[in-house]
Image 1 (spheres, rainbow, N blue to C red):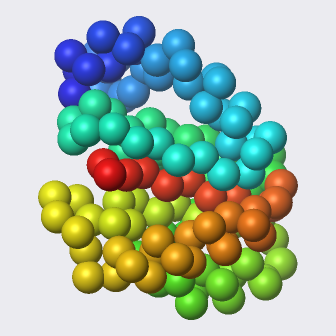
Image 2 (image 1 turned 90 degrees about the horizontal axis):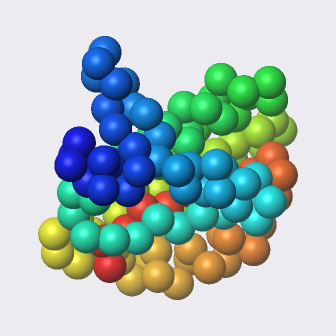
Length: 130
């Protein structure tokens, strides 16, 4: 991972924490302005690490976001969309890590619908290898 981060302008600090790449501020801005962000690319390039850092920063921001995992399922996300408060829906590889997941079809049809409900307090962060 360190080699990838260095190639993208970042590095791991000596304590093992993430030092974000130069594009990180742009990714934060896109998530804030568009309320949804899809990080794509091959395995091992750092998408999940970046996504975890984006989620961590929103969770500890002045307007604390509750991070809701996509593993909770589509119906759970729909329920949280209706609840008060700020939520970040963090969906990792909904179509599968190394092969097409059984629920890939559901995510393919439902994710665009969920994205239409994105707002300043209901944000979506998705990683994908597809």
